[in-house]
Length: 155
Image (cartoon, rainbow, N blue to C red; front, side, top):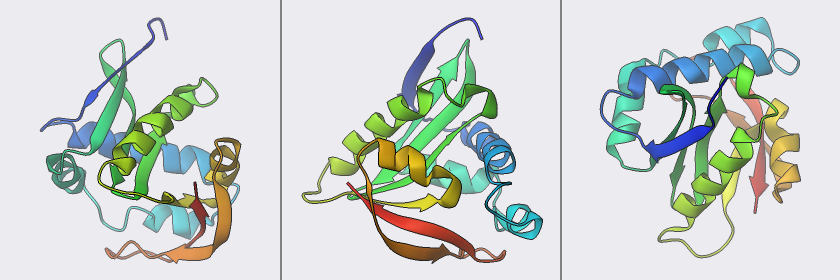
């Protein structure tokens, strides 16, 4: 890891990299909180095309290091929807940087609190950045796979 990160809007063709970052992050960070069956089904049949559709919405930011995608964040008005980094970037500050970008994106066209459905392994991260727990929830993907316990949080 030689260079620092660069950030840019996601563009067509980044879906495969976003998909791969998500898969690596889930497998690396979810093991202490979720069963092997939940981790295996987490993506609910998603493919790179699913991420291409998200990118087309214009609210996804990519983080790169030395030209390689190492993380991304996606948001909608009022909600941070996805934030994933490669395992080797954990603890580097990249997640916090992406979170700030995601918060800015989520505030566009929205007044009031911002929400996130945090995975159990990410709850502490969001708490350290000012989010507070408002209740438990479950994530079902809408695309199949077992339900996953998450924490509804608000900033």
